[in-house]
Amino acid sequence: MPTIVHSDSVFRVEPGKPPDYAAANPLLKLLGLVERSRTAAERESYDAASLQYLFPHRWLELYGPSAPDTDRLNPEEQDVKTDFQKQNVRDFRLADTRAVRGWATAGGWRGPFLQLSYRGGPDSALWQAAGRLGDAIGCVVSVQGGSPVTLRAPYDEDTDFYTVELWGRSGDGLRDALGDRGRASLDTGLLQPRPDLITGGAEDFARDRLTEQDVRAVAPRHAMHPVLPLYVDLRWTANADGSGAADPLPGASVRLGFEMRVRGWDSYLSVGSSGSPHGGVGFLEYRTLFSDYGRWAGSDELRRGLEPWNLDAFGRKGHASGESEPFLAVNYMDLHVLDPACGIGLHRHRDNQEIFLMLEGDGLMVIGDWADSGSRTRSFEIRRLPAGHLAMLRGGNLHGLMNPADQRASLFMFGGYD
Image 1: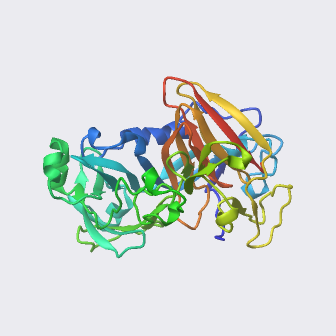
Image 2: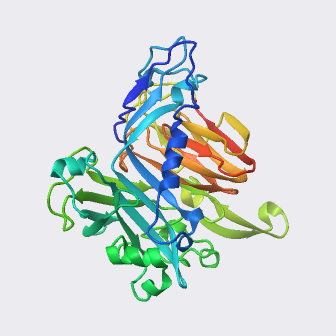
Image 3: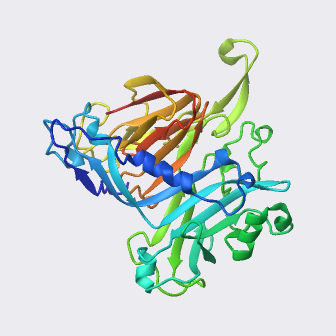
Protein backbone atom coordinates (compact mmCIF):
# COMPACT_ATOMS: atom_id res chain seq x y z
CA MET A 1 0.00 0.00 0.00
CA PRO A 2 1.49 3.42 -0.93
CA THR A 3 2.18 5.95 1.79
CA ILE A 4 -0.60 8.53 1.76
CA VAL A 5 0.52 12.12 1.28
CA HIS A 6 -2.54 14.20 1.97
CA SER A 7 -3.69 17.60 0.77
CA ASP A 8 -1.24 20.42 0.14
CA SER A 9 -3.13 23.06 2.13
CA VAL A 10 -6.10 23.33 4.50
CA PHE A 11 -7.92 26.67 4.71
CA ARG A 12 -8.98 27.73 8.19
CA VAL A 13 -12.63 28.83 8.22
CA GLU A 14 -13.49 31.46 10.81
CA PRO A 15 -16.25 30.21 13.14
CA GLY A 16 -19.65 31.60 12.21
CA LYS A 17 -18.52 32.52 8.68
CA PRO A 18 -19.29 29.54 6.43
CA PRO A 19 -17.60 29.42 3.01
CA ASP A 20 -19.18 31.19 0.05
CA TYR A 21 -19.49 28.26 -2.35
CA ALA A 22 -20.98 30.47 -5.07
CA ALA A 23 -17.69 32.34 -5.49
CA ALA A 24 -15.06 30.66 -7.66
CA ASN A 25 -16.61 27.22 -7.16
CA PRO A 26 -13.99 24.56 -8.00
CA LEU A 27 -16.51 22.18 -9.59
CA LEU A 28 -17.58 24.86 -12.07
CA LYS A 29 -13.94 25.83 -12.62
CA LEU A 30 -13.12 22.23 -13.55
CA LEU A 31 -16.14 21.75 -15.82
CA GLY A 32 -15.32 25.04 -17.54
CA LEU A 33 -12.04 23.46 -18.58
CA VAL A 34 -13.98 20.58 -20.09
CA GLU A 35 -16.16 22.99 -22.07
CA ARG A 36 -13.09 24.75 -23.47
CA SER A 37 -11.34 21.53 -24.51
CA ARG A 38 -10.94 21.18 -28.27
CA THR A 39 -10.52 18.05 -30.38
CA ALA A 40 -8.42 17.90 -33.55
CA ALA A 41 -11.22 17.14 -36.02
CA GLU A 42 -14.79 18.37 -36.41
CA ARG A 43 -17.27 17.78 -33.59
CA GLU A 44 -19.23 15.24 -35.64
CA SER A 45 -16.12 13.04 -35.79
CA TYR A 46 -16.53 12.11 -32.09
CA ASP A 47 -19.05 10.35 -29.88
CA ALA A 48 -19.55 13.23 -27.45
CA ALA A 49 -21.04 10.99 -24.75
CA SER A 50 -17.87 8.86 -24.69
CA LEU A 51 -15.37 11.64 -23.97
CA GLN A 52 -13.33 11.25 -20.78
CA TYR A 53 -11.04 13.96 -19.42
CA LEU A 54 -7.96 13.80 -17.22
CA PHE A 55 -6.51 16.89 -15.52
CA PRO A 56 -3.44 16.20 -13.38
CA HIS A 57 -3.13 18.69 -10.52
CA ARG A 58 -0.16 19.90 -8.53
CA TRP A 59 -1.80 21.61 -5.58
CA LEU A 60 -5.03 21.13 -3.68
CA GLU A 61 -6.66 23.13 -0.91
CA LEU A 62 -9.43 21.86 1.38
CA TYR A 63 -11.66 23.74 3.77
CA GLY A 64 -10.94 23.18 7.44
CA PRO A 65 -13.45 21.90 10.02
CA SER A 66 -16.33 23.80 11.58
CA ALA A 67 -16.30 24.98 15.19
CA PRO A 68 -15.34 23.78 17.73
CA ASP A 69 -12.63 22.04 15.65
CA THR A 70 -11.71 25.16 13.69
CA ASP A 71 -8.00 24.81 14.40
CA ARG A 72 -7.79 21.05 13.82
CA LEU A 73 -6.28 21.45 10.33
CA ASN A 74 -4.50 18.10 10.04
CA PRO A 75 -6.91 15.87 8.05
CA GLU A 76 -5.64 12.80 9.93
CA GLU A 77 -7.14 14.23 13.12
CA GLN A 78 -10.50 15.40 11.72
CA ASP A 79 -12.66 12.63 13.16
CA VAL A 80 -16.09 14.34 13.41
CA LYS A 81 -18.13 12.42 10.85
CA THR A 82 -21.04 14.87 10.69
CA ASP A 83 -18.88 17.90 9.84
CA PHE A 84 -19.14 18.04 6.06
CA GLN A 85 -17.34 21.36 5.70
CA LYS A 86 -13.99 19.64 6.33
CA GLN A 87 -14.56 17.49 3.24
CA ASN A 88 -14.97 20.27 0.67
CA VAL A 89 -12.43 21.45 -1.90
CA ARG A 90 -11.66 25.17 -1.87
CA ASP A 91 -9.23 25.45 -4.80
CA PHE A 92 -6.72 23.59 -6.95
CA ARG A 93 -3.92 24.29 -9.40
CA LEU A 94 -3.44 22.07 -12.41
CA ALA A 95 -0.23 20.65 -13.81
CA ASP A 96 0.77 21.46 -17.40
CA THR A 97 -0.36 18.14 -18.90
CA ARG A 98 -3.93 17.23 -19.89
CA ALA A 99 -5.51 14.26 -21.67
CA VAL A 100 -8.76 13.25 -23.35
CA ARG A 101 -9.89 9.90 -24.69
CA GLY A 102 -13.05 8.57 -26.34
CA TRP A 103 -14.53 7.15 -29.52
CA ALA A 104 -13.83 8.79 -32.89
CA THR A 105 -15.52 8.11 -36.25
CA ALA A 106 -14.40 8.58 -39.84
CA GLY A 107 -16.19 7.11 -42.83
CA GLY A 108 -17.28 3.63 -41.78
CA TRP A 109 -14.68 3.37 -38.99
CA ARG A 110 -15.32 3.82 -35.27
CA GLY A 111 -12.49 3.41 -32.82
CA PRO A 112 -10.62 4.92 -29.87
CA PHE A 113 -8.53 8.06 -29.74
CA LEU A 114 -6.23 9.63 -27.15
CA GLN A 115 -5.29 13.31 -27.02
CA LEU A 116 -2.24 14.48 -25.04
CA SER A 117 -1.49 18.17 -24.54
CA TYR A 118 0.94 20.44 -22.73
CA ARG A 119 0.30 24.03 -21.74
CA GLY A 120 2.06 26.66 -23.84
CA GLY A 121 3.32 30.03 -22.69
CA PRO A 122 6.35 31.26 -20.74
CA ASP A 123 4.90 30.25 -17.36
CA SER A 124 4.92 26.53 -18.13
CA ALA A 125 7.65 24.48 -16.46
CA LEU A 126 9.11 23.28 -19.76
CA TRP A 127 9.38 26.79 -21.21
CA GLN A 128 11.17 27.98 -18.08
CA ALA A 129 13.56 25.02 -18.21
CA ALA A 130 14.38 25.53 -21.90
CA GLY A 131 14.35 29.34 -22.02
CA ARG A 132 11.76 29.27 -24.82
CA LEU A 133 9.74 26.79 -26.89
CA GLY A 134 9.34 26.60 -30.65
CA ASP A 135 6.49 25.54 -32.90
CA ALA A 136 6.59 21.93 -31.62
CA ILE A 137 7.82 19.98 -28.59
CA GLY A 138 8.55 16.30 -28.04
CA CYS A 139 6.35 13.76 -26.29
CA VAL A 140 8.03 10.50 -25.29
CA VAL A 141 5.06 8.21 -24.63
CA SER A 142 4.41 4.61 -23.59
CA VAL A 143 0.83 3.29 -23.76
CA GLN A 144 -0.14 0.38 -21.48
CA GLY A 145 3.47 -0.46 -20.76
CA GLY A 146 4.54 -0.60 -24.41
CA SER A 147 7.89 0.55 -25.77
CA PRO A 148 8.40 4.33 -25.58
CA VAL A 149 7.78 6.24 -28.80
CA THR A 150 8.77 9.86 -29.48
CA LEU A 151 6.01 11.98 -30.98
CA ARG A 152 6.08 15.50 -32.36
CA ALA A 153 3.48 17.69 -30.61
CA PRO A 154 2.83 20.90 -32.59
CA TYR A 155 1.65 24.15 -31.02
CA ASP A 156 -2.09 24.78 -31.45
CA GLU A 157 -2.67 28.54 -31.32
CA ASP A 158 -6.44 28.04 -30.91
CA THR A 159 -5.92 26.45 -27.49
CA ASP A 160 -2.43 27.66 -26.48
CA PHE A 161 -1.44 24.01 -25.96
CA TYR A 162 1.08 21.74 -27.61
CA THR A 163 -1.11 18.83 -28.66
CA VAL A 164 -0.98 15.45 -30.31
CA GLU A 165 -4.16 13.44 -30.90
CA LEU A 166 -3.66 9.75 -31.67
CA TRP A 167 -6.32 7.74 -33.51
CA GLY A 168 -6.48 3.95 -33.51
CA ARG A 169 -6.96 3.93 -37.29
CA SER A 170 -4.62 3.58 -40.23
CA GLY A 171 -4.03 6.63 -42.40
CA ASP A 172 -5.40 4.98 -45.55
CA GLY A 173 -8.35 7.03 -46.77
CA LEU A 174 -8.50 9.06 -43.57
CA ARG A 175 -8.05 12.44 -45.26
CA ASP A 176 -11.09 11.88 -47.49
CA ALA A 177 -13.22 10.97 -44.45
CA LEU A 178 -12.43 14.21 -42.56
CA GLY A 179 -13.60 17.79 -42.91
CA ASP A 180 -11.44 20.86 -43.37
CA ARG A 181 -10.42 21.07 -39.71
CA GLY A 182 -9.49 17.40 -39.51
CA ARG A 183 -7.44 17.59 -42.72
CA ALA A 184 -5.61 20.67 -41.45
CA SER A 185 -4.81 18.78 -38.23
CA LEU A 186 -3.42 15.90 -40.28
CA ASP A 187 -1.18 18.30 -42.17
CA THR A 188 0.25 19.89 -39.01
CA GLY A 189 0.60 16.61 -37.09
CA LEU A 190 -1.97 17.65 -34.49
CA LEU A 191 -3.92 14.53 -35.58
CA GLN A 192 -1.91 11.34 -36.13
CA PRO A 193 -3.15 7.86 -37.14
CA ARG A 194 -1.38 5.47 -34.74
CA PRO A 195 -3.14 2.08 -34.51
CA ASP A 196 0.16 0.68 -33.20
CA LEU A 197 -0.27 2.75 -30.02
CA ILE A 198 -4.05 3.14 -29.68
CA THR A 199 -5.53 -0.31 -30.08
CA GLY A 200 -9.02 -1.79 -30.16
CA GLY A 201 -12.11 -1.90 -32.34
CA ALA A 202 -15.74 -0.94 -31.92
CA GLU A 203 -17.01 -4.54 -32.01
CA ASP A 204 -14.61 -6.06 -29.48
CA PHE A 205 -17.21 -5.82 -26.69
CA ALA A 206 -20.38 -6.62 -28.62
CA ARG A 207 -22.90 -8.24 -26.25
CA ASP A 208 -23.31 -11.45 -28.29
CA ARG A 209 -19.57 -12.14 -28.06
CA LEU A 210 -19.27 -11.88 -24.29
CA THR A 211 -21.66 -14.45 -22.79
CA GLU A 212 -20.14 -15.95 -19.63
CA GLN A 213 -16.71 -14.43 -20.38
CA ASP A 214 -14.55 -12.49 -17.97
CA VAL A 215 -14.53 -9.13 -19.76
CA ARG A 216 -11.20 -8.28 -18.15
CA ALA A 217 -9.61 -10.95 -20.35
CA VAL A 218 -11.16 -9.57 -23.57
CA ALA A 219 -8.88 -7.19 -25.53
CA PRO A 220 -7.01 -6.10 -22.37
CA ARG A 221 -4.94 -3.48 -24.24
CA HIS A 222 -8.03 -1.80 -25.73
CA ALA A 223 -7.73 1.97 -25.33
CA MET A 224 -11.46 2.22 -24.45
CA HIS A 225 -11.82 -0.96 -22.44
CA PRO A 226 -15.09 -0.80 -20.46
CA VAL A 227 -13.57 -2.19 -17.23
CA LEU A 228 -9.77 -2.05 -17.31
CA PRO A 229 -7.92 1.26 -16.83
CA LEU A 230 -5.77 2.86 -19.51
CA TYR A 231 -2.31 3.94 -18.35
CA VAL A 232 -0.02 6.25 -20.31
CA ASP A 233 3.51 7.21 -19.27
CA LEU A 234 4.92 10.31 -20.93
CA ARG A 235 7.69 12.86 -20.75
CA TRP A 236 7.67 16.23 -22.51
CA THR A 237 10.88 17.61 -24.05
CA ALA A 238 11.75 21.01 -25.48
CA ASN A 239 12.70 19.56 -28.87
CA ALA A 240 10.32 17.61 -31.07
CA ASP A 241 12.82 14.76 -31.50
CA GLY A 242 12.77 14.01 -27.76
CA SER A 243 16.00 15.84 -26.96
CA GLY A 244 16.65 19.04 -25.05
CA ALA A 245 15.42 20.21 -21.70
CA ALA A 246 12.67 18.29 -19.95
CA ASP A 247 10.05 19.54 -17.52
CA PRO A 248 12.12 19.64 -14.29
CA LEU A 249 9.28 19.78 -11.76
CA PRO A 250 7.69 16.86 -9.90
CA GLY A 251 5.40 15.14 -12.36
CA ALA A 252 7.71 15.70 -15.34
CA SER A 253 7.52 11.96 -15.95
CA VAL A 254 3.75 11.80 -15.92
CA ARG A 255 1.78 8.60 -15.39
CA LEU A 256 -1.73 9.21 -16.64
CA GLY A 257 -4.45 6.80 -15.64
CA PHE A 258 -8.01 6.67 -16.87
CA GLU A 259 -9.25 4.51 -14.00
CA MET A 260 -12.67 5.80 -12.87
CA ARG A 261 -14.82 2.79 -12.01
CA VAL A 262 -18.10 3.29 -13.90
CA ARG A 263 -20.18 0.16 -14.46
CA GLY A 264 -23.59 -0.39 -16.04
CA TRP A 265 -25.34 -1.79 -19.09
CA ASP A 266 -22.25 -1.58 -21.29
CA SER A 267 -19.42 -1.84 -18.74
CA TYR A 268 -19.40 -4.96 -16.57
CA LEU A 269 -17.33 -7.94 -15.47
CA SER A 270 -19.54 -10.50 -17.13
CA VAL A 271 -22.92 -10.94 -18.78
CA GLY A 272 -25.11 -14.00 -19.18
CA SER A 273 -28.55 -15.46 -18.60
CA SER A 274 -30.12 -17.69 -15.97
CA GLY A 275 -33.07 -20.01 -16.56
CA SER A 276 -35.68 -20.35 -13.80
CA PRO A 277 -33.69 -17.91 -11.61
CA HIS A 278 -33.75 -18.96 -7.95
CA GLY A 279 -36.50 -21.48 -8.73
CA GLY A 280 -38.65 -19.01 -10.69
CA VAL A 281 -39.75 -19.17 -14.31
CA GLY A 282 -38.43 -17.83 -17.61
CA PHE A 283 -35.01 -16.32 -18.19
CA LEU A 284 -33.13 -13.52 -16.48
CA GLU A 285 -30.22 -11.70 -18.11
CA TYR A 286 -27.59 -10.53 -15.65
CA ARG A 287 -24.59 -8.25 -15.68
CA THR A 288 -22.02 -8.63 -12.91
CA LEU A 289 -20.79 -5.13 -12.10
CA PHE A 290 -18.61 -5.50 -8.98
CA SER A 291 -18.00 -8.74 -7.14
CA ASP A 292 -15.67 -10.40 -4.65
CA TYR A 293 -17.29 -13.81 -4.36
CA GLY A 294 -17.71 -16.96 -6.46
CA ARG A 295 -15.35 -16.92 -9.40
CA TRP A 296 -14.50 -13.31 -8.58
CA ALA A 297 -13.18 -14.17 -5.11
CA GLY A 298 -9.88 -12.46 -4.46
CA SER A 299 -10.46 -9.63 -6.92
CA ASP A 300 -10.52 -7.15 -3.99
CA GLU A 301 -12.69 -4.79 -6.02
CA LEU A 302 -14.93 -4.39 -2.98
CA ARG A 303 -12.27 -3.92 -0.34
CA ARG A 304 -10.36 -0.88 0.85
CA GLY A 305 -6.93 -0.57 2.39
CA LEU A 306 -6.76 1.08 5.81
CA GLU A 307 -4.24 3.69 6.82
CA PRO A 308 -3.41 3.92 10.57
CA TRP A 309 -5.47 7.13 10.88
CA ASN A 310 -8.56 5.84 9.01
CA LEU A 311 -11.75 5.15 10.91
CA ASP A 312 -12.99 1.69 9.98
CA ALA A 313 -16.62 0.56 9.95
CA PHE A 314 -16.54 0.30 13.75
CA GLY A 315 -14.90 3.69 14.36
CA ARG A 316 -11.47 2.25 15.17
CA LYS A 317 -8.09 3.72 14.21
CA GLY A 318 -4.48 2.56 14.54
CA HIS A 319 -4.54 -0.16 11.86
CA ALA A 320 -1.55 -2.30 11.00
CA SER A 321 0.21 -1.97 7.65
CA GLY A 322 -1.66 -3.81 4.89
CA GLU A 323 -4.91 -4.14 6.87
CA SER A 324 -8.15 -3.90 4.85
CA GLU A 325 -11.89 -4.37 5.20
CA PRO A 326 -14.87 -5.10 2.92
CA PHE A 327 -16.48 -2.21 1.05
CA LEU A 328 -20.11 -3.03 1.79
CA ALA A 329 -20.35 -2.05 5.43
CA VAL A 330 -23.18 0.27 4.36
CA ASN A 331 -24.63 2.70 6.86
CA TYR A 332 -26.57 5.07 4.62
CA MET A 333 -28.70 4.98 1.48
CA ASP A 334 -30.04 8.19 -0.07
CA LEU A 335 -32.16 9.25 -3.01
CA HIS A 336 -31.26 12.64 -4.49
CA VAL A 337 -33.11 14.73 -7.06
CA LEU A 338 -30.81 17.24 -8.74
CA ASP A 339 -32.43 20.29 -10.27
CA PRO A 340 -31.22 21.49 -13.68
CA ALA A 341 -27.67 22.91 -13.43
CA CYS A 342 -27.33 21.53 -9.88
CA GLY A 343 -23.93 20.18 -8.93
CA ILE A 344 -22.67 18.23 -5.93
CA GLY A 345 -19.45 20.12 -5.19
CA LEU A 346 -15.94 18.72 -5.19
CA HIS A 347 -15.22 17.19 -1.81
CA ARG A 348 -13.65 14.16 -0.20
CA HIS A 349 -14.32 11.74 2.66
CA ARG A 350 -11.31 10.62 4.61
CA ASP A 351 -12.78 7.23 5.47
CA ASN A 352 -15.92 6.25 3.59
CA GLN A 353 -16.59 4.82 0.16
CA GLU A 354 -19.69 5.49 -1.95
CA ILE A 355 -21.69 4.34 -4.94
CA PHE A 356 -23.37 6.91 -7.20
CA LEU A 357 -26.15 5.22 -9.24
CA MET A 358 -27.92 7.38 -11.83
CA LEU A 359 -31.55 6.29 -11.98
CA GLU A 360 -32.91 8.88 -14.38
CA GLY A 361 -31.24 11.69 -16.29
CA ASP A 362 -27.59 12.21 -17.08
CA GLY A 363 -24.60 13.56 -15.19
CA LEU A 364 -20.93 14.42 -15.39
CA MET A 365 -19.04 12.48 -12.72
CA VAL A 366 -15.75 13.76 -11.31
CA ILE A 367 -13.45 11.49 -9.30
CA GLY A 368 -9.98 12.65 -8.34
CA ASP A 369 -7.02 11.97 -6.13
CA TRP A 370 -6.90 13.68 -2.76
CA ALA A 371 -3.60 11.95 -2.07
CA ASP A 372 -0.96 10.19 -4.14
CA SER A 373 -2.59 6.89 -5.06
CA GLY A 374 0.54 5.12 -6.26
CA SER A 375 -1.07 4.20 -9.59
CA ARG A 376 -1.07 7.53 -11.46
CA THR A 377 -0.08 11.18 -11.28
CA ARG A 378 -2.58 12.91 -9.01
CA SER A 379 -5.50 13.92 -11.26
CA PHE A 380 -9.12 14.85 -11.71
CA GLU A 381 -11.00 12.44 -14.02
CA ILE A 382 -14.30 13.40 -15.65
CA ARG A 383 -16.71 11.22 -17.59
CA ARG A 384 -20.41 10.86 -18.30
CA LEU A 385 -22.68 9.00 -15.87
CA PRO A 386 -25.87 8.07 -17.79
CA ALA A 387 -28.99 6.45 -16.36
CA GLY A 388 -28.43 2.81 -15.42
CA HIS A 389 -24.73 3.30 -14.67
CA LEU A 390 -22.93 3.63 -11.38
CA ALA A 391 -19.59 5.03 -10.27
CA MET A 392 -17.66 3.70 -7.29
CA LEU A 393 -15.20 5.78 -5.33
CA ARG A 394 -12.65 4.67 -2.80
CA GLY A 395 -12.08 6.22 0.59
CA GLY A 396 -10.28 9.55 0.22
CA ASN A 397 -11.23 10.07 -3.45
CA LEU A 398 -12.26 13.58 -4.39
CA HIS A 399 -15.62 13.53 -6.12
CA GLY A 400 -18.46 15.64 -7.46
CA LEU A 401 -21.41 15.31 -9.83
CA MET A 402 -22.98 17.86 -12.17
CA ASN A 403 -26.42 17.71 -13.76
CA PRO A 404 -25.84 19.78 -16.92
CA ALA A 405 -29.27 19.14 -18.42
CA ASP A 406 -32.44 21.25 -18.39
CA GLN A 407 -34.35 18.53 -16.55
CA ARG A 408 -34.06 16.91 -13.14
CA ALA A 409 -31.82 13.93 -12.53
CA SER A 410 -32.52 11.17 -9.99
CA LEU A 411 -29.59 9.67 -8.12
CA PHE A 412 -29.32 6.78 -5.66
CA MET A 413 -26.33 6.89 -3.32
CA PHE A 414 -25.12 4.49 -0.68
CA GLY A 415 -21.97 4.04 1.29
CA GLY A 416 -20.46 3.94 4.72
CA TYR A 417 -17.73 4.70 7.28
CA ASP A 418 -18.00 8.50 7.49
